[in-house]
Length: 312
Length: 279
Image 1 (tube, helix red, strand yellow):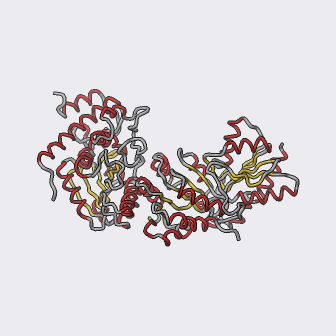
Image 2 (cartoon, helix red, strand yellow; image 1 turned 45 degrees about the vertical axis):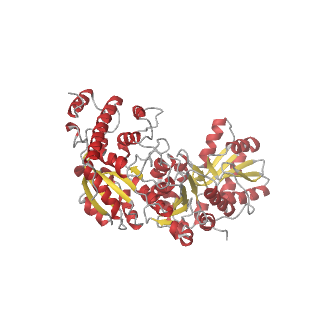
Image 3 (spheres, chains in turn red, brown; image 1 turned 60 degrees about the vertical axis):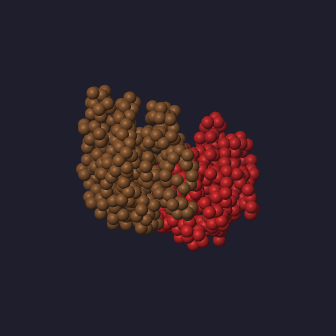
């Protein structure tokens, strides 16, 4: 069983956040789900549960940040992008405040809870806010690095889309990453998959399957969705001649849109396809079922690559 | 009960009159900006900045300074005038209000304007942020106060009551909310737009100390704020400041007409006569 990113998040928040007296953690009655509860247990004096009041939580975090603290707020991704959005935009990002907005249960990982609890529009909303860094980790190693970086290095507003699940590890322990620089997970010449989140380990499975069919695919982990690594997109298009984006998010406004913006502005025309939720409300089901139904699993990604390569 | 000396009281009254006149002159000249709310909050802001709060241009980065949040951000003109008086920026800069390139945006932005403690504009967020500052002060061992000025129309926002519960839960007794209770909002009388009911009872039931004052009497505002500062009984305190929207100019008072509309030349002249600037 692959480690769930939310568990890694909770543990990393304790590991890096507790020793730093400027870190405060806020939750809105989802702490046992987002795993911020681990910080709350380890450091109750710097943990603030405001009850089911997400908007209050985010504005309160702004007050902490204005007083020199580094607040991490926790709720589900879809609520950050809706209930919390006015404060995230007009109060936090507008002022450049150092608030870390952590959106849990991203993508389809809300599973049986259904459409209202699936986070498939968070990247779209948060990407449109000036000053906002937008990231989403793909594996436990990256999740741990991201929490460490947000605590120790990065200053300013950041949104992180976090999975409730895990889909395996693709990085060596201690791998270093740089905000804004995509990570090439696998080299390839026939096409490039640009993905983030759990679509990265699943795309790696797809790439390995495709290799057996003679299709040699590059895999790029675009964990910083904004600012997007334009150079990585351009070189992928020029060197492999076909792009497939993959995300557990609506095809509107996510990394598929961001990559399309780069390609269009650069005047690069290559076969291109966006794997993601096709502008529809999702439904209840097991996470594994939903991943297959909405075509964001290894099989769905592999099929999208085959179709796109055939258009070259 | 603490009171202002007669001399200081007269000075603050004179300052309020001056700021009132200057605000009307400025908003008439610029043909933009919120008049009604700026006039109703005048004595509250002036008394806080000039007398009650430990805030100066020199201590603006000190972690243990007091904080003032104007949650009703559309009252920016009077806030900016107070900040200029405190030396955060030159008074002449008031002329750039709401203009391209200005540090004085239509609604306050803490990243642009010295002395602004929180960006506001969308209503209902300032009390929550005040809780964050109050809890941060406790973690740092500061005995500073956080003042949040709320509009009464703003109390329609549900987040205010979320924050009211949060303040009680975390026992933020150095958080003092002041409601600019002018009973008028953009669309009309608050009693018609959204009846607030028993306002004092509402706050009390959320676990707050409730005080009331005449929001246009600097002596009353001063004494009430000083009383609030000394309560320190584990509960946050709200001061319901009875005010008049558009206070000081008869035809601007108690009406939503001057919430945000430009002042005409005729209205300007009549206002200046009433304020005894023109005779």
